[in-house]
Length: 399
Ligand code: AMP
Image (tube, rainbow, N blue to C red; front, side):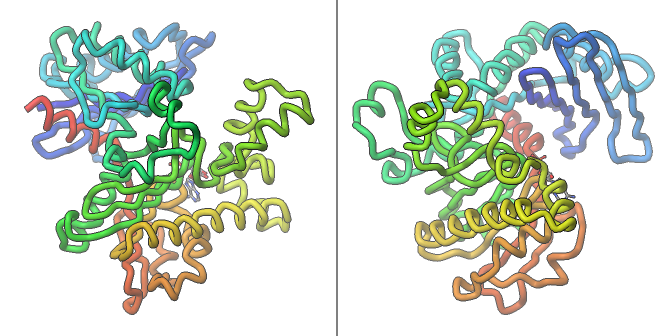
């Protein structure tokens, strides 16, 4: 079966078509600037192979429906077609916040009230994620539309990990609790790590660190998530590109009272003007490193704050798990940035975590172990593959 995976953002659509017979990627692409005067679409047929063909389009793309139609046309018609449209047996959609949904679902009409309700939990992401699913349903009548929620993997957290210590009624009436995010990625790399260690995921405990522009960690005990760093929304936890992560909630009130800022402005500051960007002006870790190399003290501080926060979470999750078999780094920074990995693990020798400097310095797209032979906790770099994970979830449901 061929499965189309869609990650629909507010003005973009990422897509990938996979042949699940061998899990190969038949085509992939990115539609951007939807709704602007000029949109772009970059499409690759047979990416990464000798047969790779790249198509670039520049034209107005007024809405997600038009963007998706263009992508499907490129996948299924013309010189670079990689499939017949009828062969697409399911469409898998990434959805950031699932609220009460604790597993992937095939969309049914009756679910829409509950699905719409989840939009409050991730107002930047969910309306676009679910909007993409609506458009795909129109373009593929009768084809199962599978929603794979970033929160689902974290639904095994026990109440002591997901409850906030605020009046209980806000949990009961408003469902305010910790949900986490990036669950598809945490689950995928935990499974890969177990496979690489030659163990069943049910037999080991892992700390997974998804560190990209957004960043989160999970404590995974015997294959089940028991804690994660993001909360009600993807704002809590680690220091991110532009998001503050953990913060005294009183800062909100302080800014309102002392600066006269309104709620929307403060929310925007904490989501888009904080994190690495807030500390040093650069939200992209590569720019932070370049600034550090120029002797920029604020960039040095940003790097220290970011890696210290992550290291503290490793300590916390070691306590949550009791025993740790492996630590996994993944996503843009986790997979590529040896400096951040080394600084994060610095000083954790007494936790049994030691980085092998040479192994850590190797640049590769492959999964690799970066701990020393005498490190009792194995430390890994494992590229995440959320599209494949979503396609596998969709296939399992459709079957
Ligand atoms: P993601 O959100 O997973 O795409 O990750 C984006 C983050 O990864 C940005 O902060 C990038 O600076 C960082 N990143 C991507 N490639 C590299 C690299 N080669 N070295 C260091 N950081 C990188």
